[in-house]
Image (cartoon, rainbow, N blue to C red; front, side, top):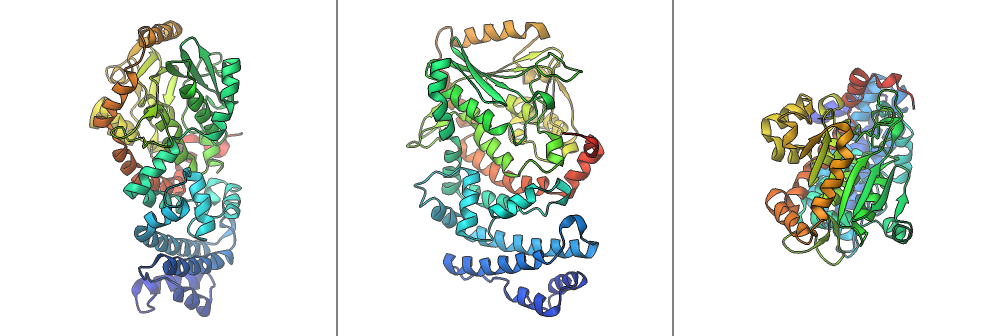
Length: 470
């Protein structure tokens, strides 16, 4: 860092105001890496700088007790570390991915990729101890170390070969899902806590269940939901899948099925939902519904390989908010109760609503999409706009009968051509490479949104989150 550079002067002043001495600042500035063009050399240089940055951060109090000057210094240090990470990854993301996956001979899910990167390239992403410390803090007291995971995943997804390989890894059935297949074969149903799957004739019925929170999604529900989706697709005796919400015990909706309330804002505010939740959900569970399960020996690209897939029906009952509205955008057929509605409250939450920015325009066009995402326009299922998304809108007490008819309609004469037609639609609507490029941008932007002070402020302003109880 050049001490005569105005930017350097600003950095030095910020650190001095927090009480750092000139020698410590100079030593840290001296460690700031200059790239050589060699991965091994530059990873060592960057690692030294990230260690030096972490040491200075460690001399500051926890965020909850910092003064304004100390917080400004922390933000300066964190920002410098992220700048170095982004420069490093812009040059080496593909090479780093090849090292971590042994030249793409190993499939690593996003969460495992980050864990391995923390060991192979110390400082590039937070290690387990750092993540555990952050996880124990409410959202407003986090330093945002998980942003570094977003920077890694964004740059990996931006690399065509590495990004496609990561998408492939996320579409493979989980090992834990495969282990439950014998139980499904024997009992015809598997209970997973926050989700279940059961066989009803030719249909696999996946039910999402988090009744205390109106079936919202959080860190306790995602693995169960993805396992249920895996099992529904892997069951060789069914031809079609159904996604429903369970009945809830909330006084206002007691005894009614609720499709889902989106992300659990109470858990989000309390800091319990990690950043990696978003990538795991959308590259895994939701994308498996849309594209099917990948095979290890075939790329899931529709022009070059095959997936294990079935048509999906959803029943939108009561409401489909946020992430649950996003589920509807990957369905083949939607049955909605006449009094149900859909919203994408991204403006009030302060996060990006998954792939809705990419998928919703296909249903309702650009203008209504912008109104729904940027201005929180509510889409009633029984409205002209709602019917552009929902296929059948029926009385609330007629949903089960409509579902039975739809299952019969899809499977009555066999669904041999369903997978082929779904692939043909994807080729023109959302090829895998477009999906990869979208999530390269999403991974970075969502990381900054998730760890932004504005998100915490939005939750307090619009959700009264500080008054909510677990």
